[in-house]
Length: 123
Image (cartoon, rainbow, N blue to C red; front, side):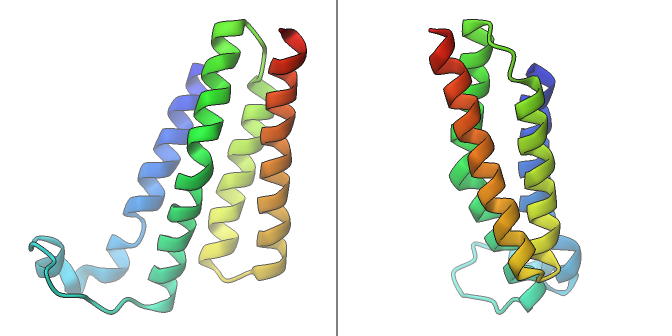
């Protein structure tokens, strides 16, 4: 399960960094104090919103995974499902696939609830 925690953190780094290759013309801005704004492409904005969305649920996932390790509750399968769903969410969001993206997001929340339930029933 520790591997899933590390993979989820890798996913966060990838999502945060994913827009940089699309904005190579803005390297001076990225190296500055960023006192002024910059306009981003639609694709970049989608990538940034997907990363922001991950930041909202990643703390819950990490907490549940750590509790699973502490309480000796096997959350490996559920954790893998969550991670796969979050990768799919990122791809669907990045490419503007709206309806499926929303379904995948809801499914990832359901997996978090299932993880919490698994921990709760083991107590």
